[in-house]
Amino acid sequence: MARVFSGIQPTGEIHLGNYIGALRRFVPAQDVDDCVFCIVDLHAITLPQDPETLRAKTLDLAAIYLAAGIDPNRSTLFVQSHVHEHAELAWILNCFTTVGELRRMTQIKDKSARQEDVSVSAGLFDYPVLMAADILLYRTERVPVGDDQRQHLELTRDVAMRFNARFPDTFVLPEADIPTAEGGARIMDFQNPEAKMSKSADSPQGTVKVTDPPDVLRRKVKSAVTDSGREIVFREDKPAISNLLTVYSIATGRSIPEVEAEYAGKGYGEFKDVLADALVEFLRPLQERHRELLADPGEIARLLRVGAEKARALATVTLAEVYERVGFLSRG
Ligand code: TYM
Image 1 (cartoon, rainbow, N blue to C red):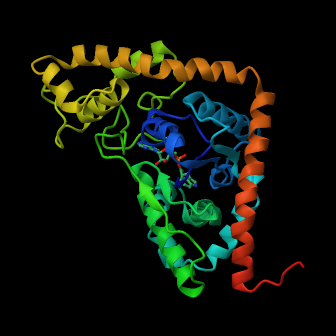
Image 2 (cartoon, protein in one colour; image 1 turned 60 degrees about the horizontal axis):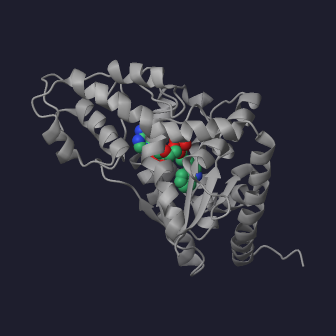
Image 3 (cartoon, rainbow, N blue to C red; image 1 turned 180 degrees about the horizontal axis):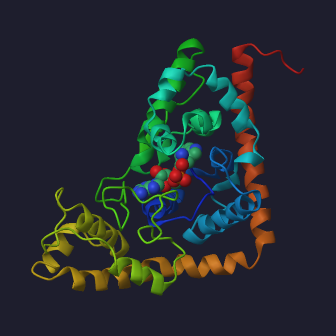
């Protein structure tokens, strides 16, 4: 069994990109691997959050994980701030990461492009080091994520290698597990196929939430931007229809060539109708289960407590080893 770790931020609403690129793929991993899944609230506060909303979103994301099929008996599901070892290891790794490396990260460039430099928090700048700590704490071998996390995974490996060069065999080097483009590595905004679907984007019509009711799903599909021409093909010069084809293929489990063949000569309108139906069916089980789970928030909180205990049992071992190696005096 390989150790698998991944995390999702409890900010905004979980959308089709999060589900297709990451969450959906966590479920079958549980059959073969030893999985640890995290709700990364420490990461969430790198941008300003309303406290009550953050608390509610944390519980809601737990319900979404469970509704998607994460089984707390087989996997470890927990909240990052419940396991203080994450913040502690991040501090150590900060001392093995250069400012130059962090400056090269594209996500900070994107996120901070919208703000004045003086208002970008040091936490946002340091975000990738905390993510490295998340992964390395659990001796993770595989990290299922979307394509936007590729550079963070590379940094995690670089930092781990640097630490291991100084203190051999401390960290396991994790591999990023990113799907192909057709497999949903980068689901694009339905209103702007040049931008990835994102929780923070100012594009409510282009962001399909996994909890959107059927009528909203249908409306978002119908109003999705399409390319010029009318061919339904997966091609680089057709980013909008390629994106819709990817979603349809994943929602129905049918290959893209098969769908292209079926819709050859048919128009965008017809394709959008079947896509809307497919999307409603694809999300229906998750939505039903999500509603049921939210009826008992006490039970979700209990599951998260158990998850945090399981996670801490693993995290304390790695952190103790790191503390010993860097030369901290034992508490005795
Ligand atoms: P977050 O919360 O932004 O996204 C959660 C997961 O969804 C994937 N994703 C997408 N995949 C395909 N198309 C999209 N449009 C799309 N948008 C998002 C992300 O790649 C991610 O897998 N830094 C992480 C959270 C994190 C983490 C970790 C992940 C913290 N520590 C350790 C893995 C391991 C993030 O912000 O994800």
